[in-house]
Length: 137
Image (cartoon, rainbow, N blue to C red; front, side, top):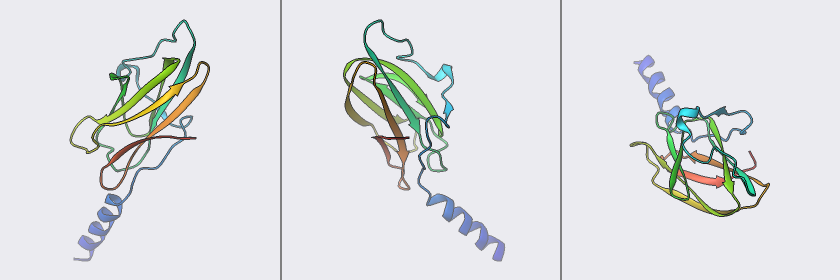
């Protein structure tokens, strides 16, 4: 009986954990097989978009699809990061879960300046709601 209580308490504490940000410099790179867009630097002015998914137990069983201007560009797992080389101008980045891990499509608009680097993080809270936000990490 006591062991069952300890197991339930441990499971409950894990279930209540939201994801945590990880610096892109410390995250694992997304394997090349899961990078499908914007991997070649444009000949004209471009910027770099860095997208990093938080670490943590919540949602770790599912990958996140990354869309840039409506084009699927990567599939990112927990604690992974990807770089994209985008032409300068207004862009839309979106994320969605690959399966039943919650989420729903989230999109953000930003302006990419030539020579600039923009960083975004993907987080998942305890209710399995996914978010995409600018970050200093």
